Amino acid sequence: MAVRARYRMRDYTITADPVTPATYQAVCVTGEDADCGADSDHQETEAAVERWIAEHTRDTGHDFYRRARWDYVKAEPGAWQ
Image 1 (cartoon, rainbow, N blue to C red):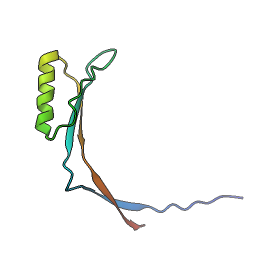
Image 2: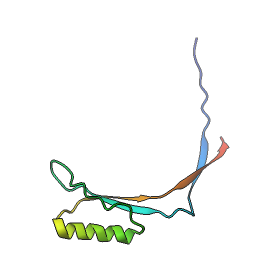
Image 3: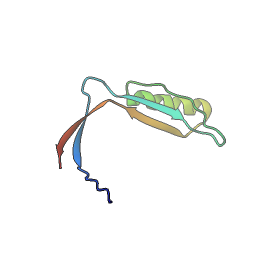
Image 4: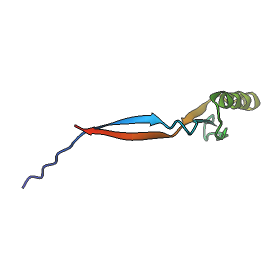
């Protein structure tokens, strides 16, 4: 007996939450055996994270970072197709 499945697709609309502001973060990943791991914590502006990166580079000579923008979004399902 064969089992059959039917898949239905659905589009979603993803929108940023207008009430909650985005935050920015950087982590120093410089290192051969292990990452430095220094963390900027969450900053309110991209400029603040860039300033932290510049200061960390100045103080340590490290030059490789993972940077992220964190924000909240809402996913609204659309019609089934």
